[in-house]
Length: 619
Ligand code: HEM
Ligand SMILES: [Cu+2]
Image (cartoon, rainbow, N blue to C red; front, side, top):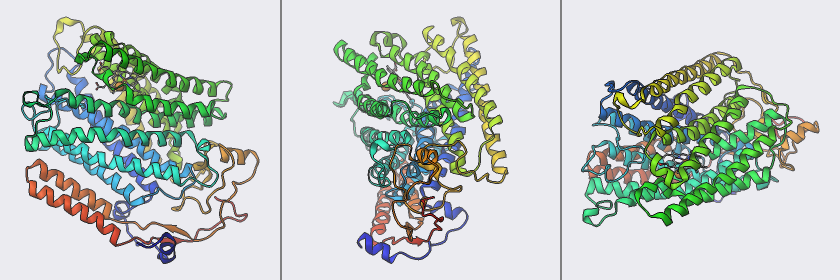
């Protein structure tokens, strides 16, 4: 391998040209990869949303038969799997891709090709999961896929799709974690100390650490179950000396950190949007970064609060009840800091800021029901009831999705060079806000009334009909709200780009760049002397100092190989599913050979010569 300096010297003077769709398939540009993550997440959201509506239609009235019990099981399972693995995580990873390198003053991520491979493993792995509907049935054992229900004795091929599909997307997610940990730790612009990073970048850093430690346990679980189903290994089979709780333990050692993987970046978004639209610096910056870290640490210590009803005994239950409730402390710190940031600010009500403001009370409701569930004796009553469904939708929809929508309206001009229509945005906001509460608030009471989770129908005499109908009506209001978002996309893309570089009077570096952002991001790397350096520079009426003289910029070449590697891995997945073991083995070898070829055929990249504005400022 050539040394870096040698490689820079040998770089080509122009990039290999790909056109049309190929330019996207071969892109290693974090900005394009971010866009593809967001599009793919919205695409899968349509599927997950359709499944949710079908579930709500089925539950409209007692003894309803729109869906069979089997279809109902497949729909709620795929709904959960989709929303967690194919929507919430990828849309947030999309923002991390599109924004974090800009916020830290970097020209790309540390491993651009690996980044493309992560993307394609997610996209193709997600499509792989969905082909299960046409190949013998979708996963149907719930998103947590408990053994022994998910064992060969009780379930069909859908579970194989779950085991293999989540391994495929999971490798991609793990690579993303490694990539962004290295990027954030090593590629910050000169002077950007850790405690000068924007809070969204902080949330990304901590999230990537969570992924790094949370994904191995679920991967082990998936591998053990795959070996069980394909080769009759018996890890979870009690009769043969296995342990049925092994699945649950490993799953929740992953699963609870996972819920923080999908909420911390939303915390990060809210921590960017609120200061910008209140025109004040984030209150309690250090304590915010500290709270993120403490939450991440504690999130690995609470997993058996999902297993209170398993009979682990009062000592274990008490310890985990206490650690679970402890998480409310750093979370409370964050809430108070957001409120203190708003205090006395000149708040501008745009769609982005309204989503961020709605996030606070909705997430608090979810946190409060979480603490209620964390009381082990109460949980014995509430476990597997609609109360739990209400809890996790308040945190995941009221929290994660509201945060993601705040981020969408906020960063849209940065990512796509256009501003979403704010009037339509407010319709979108109010319908989603009202629809969400009408759908999910009644579920608290259904749960307290004893309605179990995951039943495909119920009898008329329980008194659950009215609240179920209310909930179904809410779901259609939500649908209307999301269709307005779609319409907003369409009319916004029908217009010419607005090319406004800094529409919200932003604070962090991503807003210091021209619109559209050039492929190399920064013509000269900026020199960072303050937190909120761009804001400070604007206040002082000067550009940000450049940290380097202008010169040619070394860029990585586009490449189709990440796409083809991902395709090969998915091919191996199908082979394994169809029990063509030799084919699976050969395709996995082919994938590794393709990766090895990357090392032999070294990419020397190419140079661009940016136009540097007079005065030498980094633009
Ligand atoms: C103060 C913070 C929180 C506490 C104390 C808490 C507590 C709990 C407890 C005890 C359960 C298990 C209920 C049961 O199955 O009987 C639960 C379930 C759940 N929580 Fe939380 N939670 C908190 C925050 C969050 C957050 C931030 C998220 C996600 C963004 C989240 C997502 C979930 C999900 C998805 C489930 C259901 C898992 C399933 O059974 O499918 N929680 N929570
Ligand atoms: Cu949990």
